[in-house]
Every structure is written in C-alpha cells, then in structure tokens.
Image (cartoon, rainbow, N blue to C red):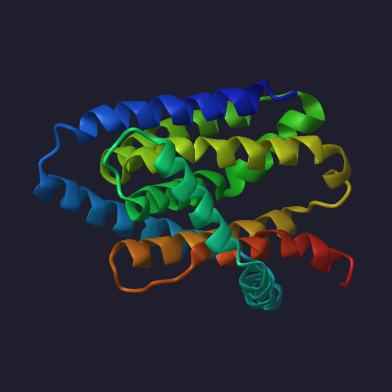
Length: 227
C-alpha cells in the first residue's frame, strides 16, 4: 500500500543527501544566487498554481479560517520546536533557524501540489503508483536544489513528506466518494498560495508563518458538507 510513498520519500532522502554534498563546494555568492532563483521559482509556481482554483469564495474562506486554526494551535511554533529539537541532535554547526527554514520550506514545497494529492489517492485506491513515481523524480530533483542551499533541514523534511502522503493513502478509500476535480483544484490553489508565501519569505520581503496556513489545505473537504 505504501510502496509508492516509500519510493517518493527515499527520493527526497537521496536528493537531500546529494544536495548536502553539493553544498560543501558551492561558493557563498553562488549559494545566494541559487536561493534567489529558488525564491522566484516558488513565486512562479505559486502564481500559476493559484489559477487552478475554481471556487474563489471557498479558497478565501479556507485561507482565512485555516490560518485562524493554525494560529490557535500555534502549528508554526510546534514545527519550529520540532525542527530545533532535531537540529540539536545533529553533530553539526547548523543554526536552528537555518535548519527550521530548510525543514519547513522542504516540507511544504514537497507536499504541495496536485501530484502530492492525486498520487497517494491513486496509490491507495487502485494500488497504482505511477503518479507517485513521477512525483518522486520531481521531489528528488527539488530536494537536491533545496538542500544545496538550505541544508540538513530539507533532508529531515522527508518525515513530514512520508507522514502526509501515507495519511492520504490510508484515508483514500473514504476520500474516493468525496474528492472531486473541483475540490482537488481548490486544494492545489490553496497550496500554491502557501508556496507563493514561501517565495516571498525566501526573498526576505515578508515574514509569514506559513505553517499556520496549512490547515487551510484540508478545509475544501469540510466545505463539501456545508455546500
């Protein structure tokens, strides 16, 4: 059941490991240039993905209600604490803030998008891992680039990648009767908004606690029962 998710997770781990080795030989100015390129790419992905949404009102409500839930739970704080805990366990000179940035950025960029939703669903319902295999190639390449600039945190984001996609696989049976193309498009649009926020943060233009917006991703499902 989880074979496709495992392959995807291993791709992140392998890509992150390769990125860490590349990082050691990258000059500071090149690293900064890559960071800006990644930020602009995230903004591009965010802007283009936002256009996939079909129910504007639902998307706005999901983002607003989602961040309220995230702030009440203090999801960003807990994730940063967890990232800080992992950073302290590592025999390295990485600063907690850098580790957290890599952990959160990697987790969101590797979990957001239509493939990250449809792939686990198809895997759980039909045992077809084709989309997850495709996603694994993309995630592996992305993790190489992210880890080469953001460091070890990206590698450890594989924990959340596995947990997120495995959870979707587990509940795929029940989701089959709920998810529609329109709902998936709305979830992708909301995820793209979060990716856009990541890009703005990476350029130091904003200081958005992106993890507090994550509950918004799942609200389109809740809205189905209210519509």
